[in-house]
Image (tube, rainbow, N blue to C red; front, side, top):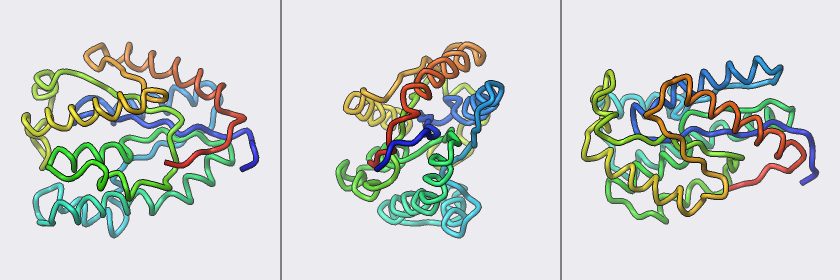
Length: 210
Protein backbone atom coordinates (compact mmCIF):
# COMPACT_ATOMS: atom_id res chain seq x y z
CA UNK A 1 0.00 0.00 0.00
CA UNK A 2 1.46 3.38 -1.02
CA UNK A 3 2.30 5.79 1.80
CA UNK A 4 0.14 8.91 1.77
CA UNK A 5 -0.46 11.73 4.21
CA UNK A 6 -3.54 10.42 5.91
CA UNK A 7 -5.74 10.76 8.95
CA UNK A 8 -5.33 8.63 12.06
CA UNK A 9 -7.69 6.08 13.54
CA UNK A 10 -7.94 6.87 17.26
CA UNK A 11 -10.06 4.57 19.45
CA UNK A 12 -11.28 5.09 23.01
CA UNK A 13 -12.02 1.92 24.97
CA UNK A 14 -12.97 1.10 28.55
CA UNK A 15 -15.76 -0.12 30.79
CA UNK A 16 -19.19 1.50 30.89
CA UNK A 17 -19.26 5.02 32.37
CA UNK A 18 -15.48 5.44 32.08
CA UNK A 19 -16.00 8.66 30.10
CA UNK A 20 -15.42 7.41 26.55
CA UNK A 21 -18.41 9.10 24.95
CA UNK A 22 -17.75 12.51 26.51
CA UNK A 23 -14.00 12.39 25.97
CA UNK A 24 -14.23 11.20 22.36
CA UNK A 25 -16.43 14.18 21.46
CA UNK A 26 -14.26 16.59 23.44
CA UNK A 27 -11.15 15.20 21.73
CA UNK A 28 -12.73 15.68 18.30
CA UNK A 29 -13.48 19.30 19.16
CA UNK A 30 -10.00 19.88 20.62
CA UNK A 31 -8.31 18.50 17.51
CA UNK A 32 -10.52 20.70 15.37
CA UNK A 33 -9.08 23.78 17.06
CA UNK A 34 -5.69 22.74 15.64
CA UNK A 35 -7.11 23.00 12.12
CA UNK A 36 -7.37 19.23 11.68
CA UNK A 37 -10.15 17.40 9.82
CA UNK A 38 -11.76 15.08 12.38
CA UNK A 39 -14.89 12.93 12.45
CA UNK A 40 -16.40 11.34 15.56
CA UNK A 41 -17.81 7.80 15.33
CA UNK A 42 -19.45 5.50 17.85
CA UNK A 43 -19.94 1.74 17.87
CA UNK A 44 -22.42 0.23 17.87
CA UNK A 45 -23.84 2.62 15.31
CA UNK A 46 -27.55 2.21 16.01
CA UNK A 47 -28.65 4.02 12.82
CA UNK A 48 -28.44 0.94 10.57
CA UNK A 49 -30.75 -2.07 10.46
CA UNK A 50 -28.14 -4.17 12.26
CA UNK A 51 -27.60 -1.32 14.72
CA UNK A 52 -31.33 -1.16 15.41
CA UNK A 53 -31.35 -4.86 16.34
CA UNK A 54 -28.35 -4.32 18.62
CA UNK A 55 -30.13 -1.37 20.25
CA UNK A 56 -33.19 -3.49 20.99
CA UNK A 57 -30.95 -6.11 22.58
CA UNK A 58 -29.08 -3.57 24.71
CA UNK A 59 -32.36 -2.04 25.91
CA UNK A 60 -33.52 -5.52 26.97
CA UNK A 61 -36.43 -5.55 24.50
CA UNK A 62 -34.96 -8.35 22.35
CA UNK A 63 -33.26 -11.62 23.28
CA UNK A 64 -30.42 -13.08 21.19
CA UNK A 65 -27.80 -15.75 21.88
CA UNK A 66 -24.34 -14.57 22.92
CA UNK A 67 -22.85 -15.79 19.64
CA UNK A 68 -25.43 -14.00 17.49
CA UNK A 69 -25.10 -10.64 19.26
CA UNK A 70 -21.31 -10.87 19.08
CA UNK A 71 -21.43 -11.38 15.31
CA UNK A 72 -23.95 -8.55 14.92
CA UNK A 73 -21.65 -6.15 16.78
CA UNK A 74 -18.82 -7.18 14.45
CA UNK A 75 -21.03 -6.87 11.35
CA UNK A 76 -21.97 -3.35 12.48
CA UNK A 77 -18.29 -2.37 12.35
CA UNK A 78 -17.86 -4.01 8.94
CA UNK A 79 -20.74 -1.89 7.62
CA UNK A 80 -18.54 1.21 7.98
CA UNK A 81 -15.08 -0.06 7.01
CA UNK A 82 -15.09 1.36 3.44
CA UNK A 83 -16.34 4.75 4.62
CA UNK A 84 -13.70 4.83 7.35
CA UNK A 85 -10.89 3.92 4.96
CA UNK A 86 -11.99 6.59 2.45
CA UNK A 87 -12.04 9.29 5.14
CA UNK A 88 -8.64 8.30 6.54
CA UNK A 89 -7.00 8.21 3.11
CA UNK A 90 -8.46 11.66 2.37
CA UNK A 91 -6.78 13.09 5.47
CA UNK A 92 -9.64 13.01 7.98
CA UNK A 93 -8.82 11.53 11.38
CA UNK A 94 -11.43 9.40 13.14
CA UNK A 95 -12.06 9.48 16.88
CA UNK A 96 -14.01 6.30 17.61
CA UNK A 97 -15.96 5.57 20.79
CA UNK A 98 -15.63 1.76 21.16
CA UNK A 99 -14.30 -0.61 18.51
CA UNK A 100 -13.41 -4.30 18.08
CA UNK A 101 -11.90 -4.57 21.55
CA UNK A 102 -15.21 -3.84 23.26
CA UNK A 103 -16.78 -6.59 21.19
CA UNK A 104 -14.16 -9.06 22.35
CA UNK A 105 -14.09 -7.91 25.99
CA UNK A 106 -17.84 -8.07 26.53
CA UNK A 107 -18.29 -11.43 24.81
CA UNK A 108 -15.34 -13.07 26.58
CA UNK A 109 -16.74 -11.71 29.87
CA UNK A 110 -19.90 -13.69 29.06
CA UNK A 111 -17.85 -16.86 28.64
CA UNK A 112 -17.18 -17.05 24.91
CA UNK A 113 -13.78 -18.16 23.61
CA UNK A 114 -11.21 -15.36 23.24
CA UNK A 115 -9.85 -16.48 19.84
CA UNK A 116 -13.35 -17.11 18.47
CA UNK A 117 -14.34 -13.58 19.47
CA UNK A 118 -11.28 -12.08 17.76
CA UNK A 119 -11.80 -13.94 14.48
CA UNK A 120 -14.58 -11.78 12.89
CA UNK A 121 -12.53 -8.63 13.55
CA UNK A 122 -9.65 -9.76 11.33
CA UNK A 123 -9.43 -7.51 8.29
CA UNK A 124 -10.95 -4.42 9.89
CA UNK A 125 -8.80 -1.30 10.06
CA UNK A 126 -6.20 -1.38 12.81
CA UNK A 127 -6.21 1.67 15.10
CA UNK A 128 -3.14 3.87 15.20
CA UNK A 129 -3.77 4.26 18.92
CA UNK A 130 -6.18 2.90 21.50
CA UNK A 131 -6.73 4.99 24.62
CA UNK A 132 -7.88 2.73 27.44
CA UNK A 133 -9.80 4.85 29.94
CA UNK A 134 -9.30 2.93 33.16
CA UNK A 135 -10.91 3.46 36.56
CA UNK A 136 -11.86 1.19 39.50
CA UNK A 137 -15.27 -0.41 38.97
CA UNK A 138 -16.41 1.05 42.32
CA UNK A 139 -15.89 4.55 40.87
CA UNK A 140 -17.82 3.75 37.70
CA UNK A 141 -20.80 2.29 39.57
CA UNK A 142 -21.25 5.62 41.35
CA UNK A 143 -21.35 7.64 38.14
CA UNK A 144 -24.65 8.90 36.74
CA UNK A 145 -26.99 6.53 34.88
CA UNK A 146 -24.95 3.38 35.64
CA UNK A 147 -27.24 0.35 35.32
CA UNK A 148 -29.41 1.72 32.52
CA UNK A 149 -28.44 -0.92 29.95
CA UNK A 150 -28.00 -4.67 29.84
CA UNK A 151 -24.26 -4.86 30.59
CA UNK A 152 -24.12 -2.25 33.35
CA UNK A 153 -23.71 -4.61 36.31
CA UNK A 154 -20.78 -4.32 38.70
CA UNK A 155 -19.68 -7.99 38.61
CA UNK A 156 -19.93 -8.15 34.84
CA UNK A 157 -17.99 -4.92 34.34
CA UNK A 158 -15.20 -6.35 36.52
CA UNK A 159 -14.91 -9.27 34.10
CA UNK A 160 -14.89 -6.87 31.14
CA UNK A 161 -12.08 -4.89 32.77
CA UNK A 162 -10.02 -8.08 33.13
CA UNK A 163 -10.31 -8.77 29.40
CA UNK A 164 -9.39 -5.17 28.53
CA UNK A 165 -6.32 -5.55 30.75
CA UNK A 166 -5.35 -8.71 28.85
CA UNK A 167 -5.74 -7.05 25.45
CA UNK A 168 -3.84 -3.99 26.65
CA UNK A 169 -0.92 -6.15 27.76
CA UNK A 170 -0.89 -8.11 24.47
CA UNK A 171 -1.10 -4.99 22.29
CA UNK A 172 0.76 -2.46 24.42
CA UNK A 173 2.73 -1.15 21.43
CA UNK A 174 -0.30 0.98 20.46
CA UNK A 175 -2.47 0.89 23.60
CA UNK A 176 -2.20 3.78 26.07
CA UNK A 177 -3.67 3.58 29.58
CA UNK A 178 -5.39 6.80 30.68
CA UNK A 179 -6.31 7.32 34.34
CA UNK A 180 -10.05 8.00 34.05
CA UNK A 181 -10.33 9.02 37.72
CA UNK A 182 -8.70 12.36 36.88
CA UNK A 183 -10.71 15.48 36.11
CA UNK A 184 -12.35 15.71 32.71
CA UNK A 185 -9.99 18.55 31.78
CA UNK A 186 -6.87 16.58 32.75
CA UNK A 187 -7.99 13.47 30.85
CA UNK A 188 -8.74 15.54 27.75
CA UNK A 189 -5.37 17.31 27.91
CA UNK A 190 -3.59 13.93 28.08
CA UNK A 191 -5.61 12.61 25.15
CA UNK A 192 -5.03 15.73 23.05
CA UNK A 193 -1.25 15.78 23.58
CA UNK A 194 -0.82 12.06 22.87
CA UNK A 195 -3.06 12.23 19.80
CA UNK A 196 -1.10 15.12 18.29
CA UNK A 197 2.11 13.12 18.73
CA UNK A 198 0.57 10.08 17.06
CA UNK A 199 -0.84 12.13 14.17
CA UNK A 200 2.67 13.39 13.46
CA UNK A 201 4.20 9.91 13.69
CA UNK A 202 1.65 8.16 11.47
CA UNK A 203 0.86 10.71 8.75
CA UNK A 204 3.20 9.12 6.16
CA UNK A 205 2.62 5.49 7.12
CA UNK A 206 0.16 3.14 5.41
CA UNK A 207 -3.06 1.99 7.02
CA UNK A 208 -2.88 -1.45 8.62
CA UNK A 209 -5.45 -4.15 9.21
CA UNK A 210 -6.27 -6.19 12.28
